[in-house]
Length: 483
Picture (cartoon, rainbow, N blue to C red):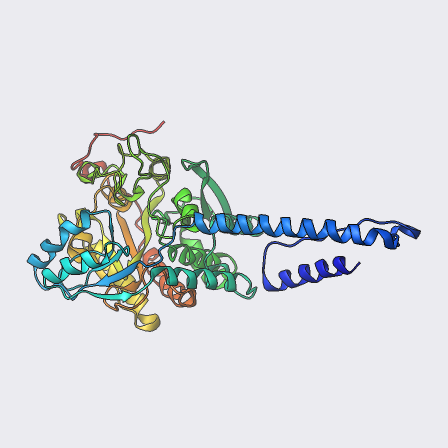
């Protein structure tokens, strides 16, 4: 009986503490009513229970060890930061390092910005020596990146137990995000519909939540997590969904005027992998032929200037074997082409505090693209003074990105207003935040983004661009068709 009490106490303890493994053991009976076994059996029962307890502990230790080992460790990894680059020559000197897969560039080289690189313990000294030789004054700003990941995991566990938080105020895993949009559709069936637009390589659903209170309206499509490690994106989308459903009384005009499409997880397999295996995973999980390196950068896999992307299968920006080699990208493109009411596209990324204009904005006098982005920038600043920058990736970041979703949406699908928004933190703050954003910052980021999203939809175009307006520049094929 004492052992039974012991296990009941353990179960109560683990439930309160949030530990997920708990057992109740029912001991052998006997005697009157089954509750009075003979005293001669107690010693045998004790021995049997002790053996089973040891075996259970052993299995638990083995399972926990396997789980820990499965998650990629960044123990001893450093984040190294240079001085601000002042010239094009300094930028050119660093660019060759971006091609080396041993280095994970958090901030790419550009004039007026520092460079930040995550590097393993074996390469740290060599990288520091290289950067010192280049006169870039490197210094270590994060001594042990694994320590930052442990802090994040602990915070996620703590926040998951706080029932007073909105879903948008903590990081949710893939299943939790799917459960949330299903709950929204069930709770608000008069305005909310889930559309399954396809499946990932590993068979996970790509689910779009549509919010609409009537036909015949133009729409905005917002997607996040096409890059798996950019966890700060989905909370801003979930917050927008909350505002348009649970807080609809205050936002009725936004739903009356427009339809809203939300794709909170554009890269399901990569996102799951970033939770279970490698927090910094960026790509899809589709294997590559003739390579041990897995995955394609889905935001380099769209059919616009795709052929200029990197062919290195081990690169985080590998563009894939062909346009739309990734089923996720094919599903997104087909959905956009099939839904002509979508006249505004927003890709939510992190980080840098930027609103990026499509590539073609450099070649065309589209004043609307710039002015609408400036309105969103001002809306963000009005919340708490946070400053975003507006420009093309080349103009703001000093690099070209080939095969991106928002460039394709503008140049090939004819969507008049198409942007990427890179959320907090800023490159200029140079703090300890990067892809690992403190959950406590989410309410502010959500509030800022909601104001930006509202500013965006006030400019929703009535039509897409005509065929004659769409320049078929540098396409690998004249027309993209999907089966």
